[in-house]
Image (tube, rainbow, N blue to C red; front, side, top):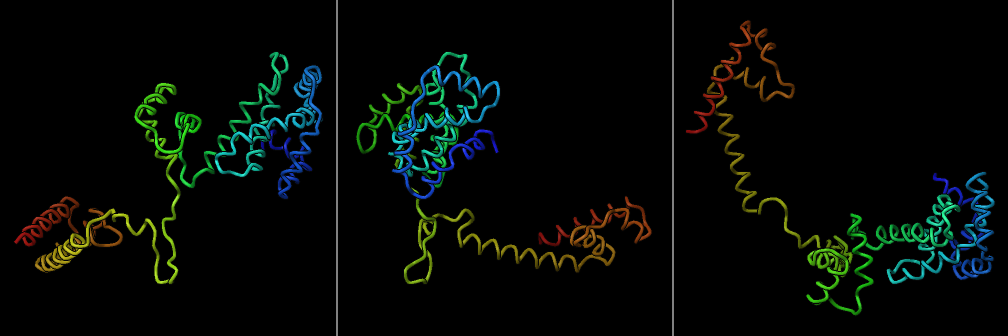
Length: 289
């Protein structure tokens, strides 16, 4: 468990209880009643946390900025995810920011924390917006969020719009088109149970099999059966010793070594290798007929 998460659980029990029980309006009302900190108060509390690991100071820093997380979360409401979930993810980002905040840098915590809050929300959106990940690389994630913001209307981009967005985002037009396809795609069940309970339906029923066609499979099975028959007859034509060597070297579950067979037949390992090679050559000749 990270310090940020531990701090979350230590500092916000009542507030998180409000969110977890579905009282989102109550939570938002509560965070909006928490007083904001002045620059001097914020600097003093941040120094206490940095120098003395003062969790009470950290709690006050966190609590005074919870309304800020709610404001950011509202901006991501267009992704169809629960506002409460976005707020909780953003609060984790706020905890991380508080832990890393350096009061000597001369910036307010709210300016420093915005990156961490949005980063946690971005990660949550990417993981939960679709069953299949829509963006996996850093460049794809940046394109995902920028492309949604660039859409001024419903429907697909025109080529001129694609070129314009690609130029603004400094990516190739092909990357814009690919991400637009992902944005407009929808999750679909691979298999669905029919209402009559007689079978399944769904996109899985219309996908081509990765292996051969039924005709090719039947032909391959027939050829395999024929080869097996030819091999059986060819083995019967071998003398007992040669057949025994091949069976021990190739057909047994535990393959025998040349030296083991040499000891069994009281000959050298090289002689066993010669007999094996001769037997294989005879098999090939018999099966080729």
